[in-house]
Amino acid sequence: MSANQPPAPSGFSPRTFAGYVRRQKYWVIYGSLTGVVMNTTVVLPPILLGRAIDAAMALEREGVTPAGLRRLYLAALWYVGVTVVYAIGRLGKRYGFRVMANNFNIDLRSDLLRTTLGWKPARHERERIGDLLSRCIGDIQVVSDTLMTTVTEVFDTGLMMLSNFVALLIYLPGLTLLAAIPVPLTIIFAQATGGAIFARSTKTRVTASRVNSHLQETTVGVRLLRLFGREAAERRRLERLCGDQMTANLDLTVLQGGLMPAYSALATSGVILVIGLGGLRVTHGLWTVGHFTTYLMMFLAFSGRTLMAARVLNHVHAGRAAWTRVAAFLYDRPGTQPAQPPVPAAPAAPAAPPVPAALPGHIAARDLTFRFGADGQRPALDRVSLDAPAGSLVAITGPVGSGKTALALALTGLYNYEGSLTVGGRELRALSREERLATISLLDQDSFLFSATIAENVSFEPLAAGAEPAPALARAATTAALADDLPLFADGYRTMVGELGVRVSGGQRQRIALARSLYPRTPVVVLDDPFSAVDVATERRMLNRLRADLAGSTVVLFSHRLGAFPEADLILLLRDGQVAEAGRHEELLAAGGTYARIFKAQQWLEDNAMKDGANRARGEASR
Image 1 (cartoon, one colour):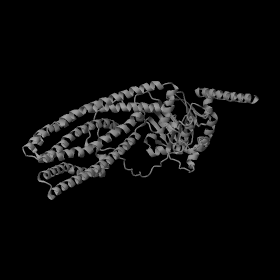
Image 2: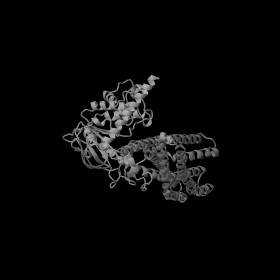
Image 3: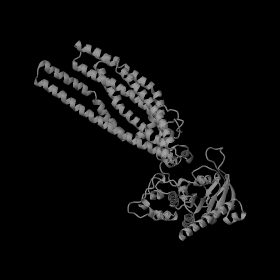
Image 4: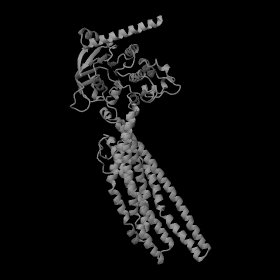
């Protein structure tokens, strides 16, 4: 998605933002009313200033009189008062629209987060986190700033130009219409450059996304990069990406900067006519100097704001580029503009009769087929069948690529599969989200940890200062053999584990993740290689506690290490996506197949490791 940009939408249609604007209707009304106040008074200061100038010149001609001074003071007082009202309206308008834009920013990011959280896992695996963050932060900020600028300038520029134009027509219609001809030509010119602005803005957003993706990936994999000596290579790659971003930004800046003088020259060319023809009217006595000053100031304000109008159009085209990238994720339909933004769905009424949230742990698969990626790809699981009664321990092993991870993912209920896979007699794909959460928990191979405390990683809830851990938290930590390590942490359950768990060991990270999967006490617990980062003694201690704590739950254990397999009620050995051997431990040993050979080899290695350890201990004692 980050590589191929969706086609450009037609623009900022009112329908596109209608839902978001309605959420901020009170701030829009407030900003609009204060904007009207500002723009109804914007033409008065030049008029009052002209009257003050004429009053001052009358005093010079006619001498100082009380009536003349009164006219001068009154004109000055009106000028100051109207200027204050204008400033208050301007401040209120900007405040209202800034709050509106900030709330719009929050709503848009919240909707984007809700949309991405609802993606299927395959979509998450396809996208790059850095690109998603770039859209969620940078692109949305560009869209929000564009909305703020556009709405603000409707008053600061649009109404101000209209107010000045009407006043100019009242003063002198013929000169106003003639001198104002360059203004619409400037707007047409600015609109014609939209395609070039859009293309260059899209390129700047894409290059920024690539830089963010690279920084995110190198930060997460910093230890691996250092291990393989890739620091210099990644720095060079970052320099190339930053160079591309700089070039794209320069192209956009040069284009926009080069257009500004052209806009300015075209928009203000009418001033020459105003000065020439207006000056003639003064010399012929048709205008006073005050009248000429008033007209010139209003025309300069009118034509000068044309430059801002052209700049706003450029911002809109740049905002379109950012919106296109956001809409591609927000609505999951590249290039489309739906009538309404997504809004939280109203809670559905409970079905009658209510379905129990948690289901029995009986797992049954019939001709289960699972594929990674698109249809037509070779299946990672091919017509697998199994039957695990509730409360049983199912142990699954096999070589790399045998289908263990595919079966673990299928059991989560998050992925599509073919055939039948039932839990408690219900088809897994048909379970509601609530039923699935209450029925199945998972420990995956990654043992992912959030940058939070141990308590938050296990229970998703913070542990208040001075509070004792809840019984469920303490139970899960004890079962996962995590409680044994808590005295090693200065802050106990409140210890921060760092980004991705960098502040704890691999074994501790795995046990924290295991405790998280045990915390909800679901009827089905899927454990993908839970003992890979612990020693044999810890593995046995954890297994004994698991069997005691999860009595009544169905435990599906995936592992290369077979030390826990003798306790299993059912063992499956997978090969090439199919069940190659199945049965209890004693049955598979008696069969003398692959499982028996692997188990005996691991047992021999374990026995010899124990003998070597004992010999070393005796040698050290004798010394």
